[in-house]
Length: 397
Image 1: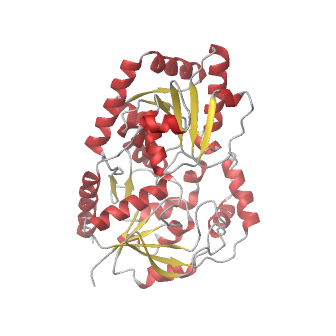
Image 2: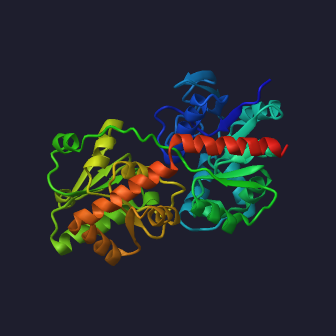
Image 3: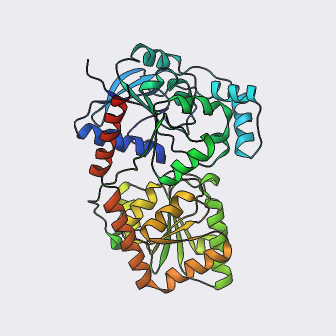
């Protein structure tokens, strides 16, 4: 039997939201198009926002955009206990070793998935995405010599839990999206000369059709605007962006607009809506038009492993403004010279004002960001890197 590349993730679908989910879907589909034998093994959970003990999909095999997807049922879990522990981690509190075990056991229960991995442990190569979910924790320990983890690692409380140290050290390879992510892995898990560690990146399609005038006309936007694209939540730092923008508009009397696009709730006052336009979740076509229409793309998150939205904005040659405490986005800006970064309100005002008041210089930054993406993150480049990784995995058997 020919070995397949099995991607294991907690949920999978054509319209599943999330950066890691989008990265997995894109990689799997392009590997399949390149002629590699690929499958996805996942649970019956709908997505990250669903009840993780509810089987939205029927167990079994189906096709999703040409990819074979095998879904396994999930069982009941102690949601109350898990939620309490998760709340503590999200709010900066530590938990004990026995509580870490409870945390991972009560996250997602998918025993039939692990049984299936065990039954085929000598046949395939397994790629687990991302690091923190039960599907990775339990699954990657079954056949570690034939397993790789694509952690999409962030500098967050979960990454420092003791439970992740052993399984992530045992797998044959760790695959990163950026050098900053790889550096963070060394900081948390230490060096490991016996383990393959490779920076692969993520691919984007350069042939993007967009119409900036269509976007402005459709949503009645006149004049310069700054765009935020992504989930609107604390983890993405959108409350900080809204606060900074509110102060910027009020103190400087500016008329530019901040346009917010993506899932999640945003609390805006009547005064806020004079300078902040919340468009919510939009189609892919509208999002591409938005990137092209924006004068600046602002990404305030400090926890990123790659940042697809930043790359998409650069494909549209839109200059970026990112948070300087995000190593990944800062790395992208420094390597591309495609944008500026801020670390506090004063720097936010200074950098934002510079980009708005110097459109020619901002345009140069945007074009440099575009060249960076085209040179480093075409799908052919990513597939070539991944094929080299696969040969290395085979060579270490």
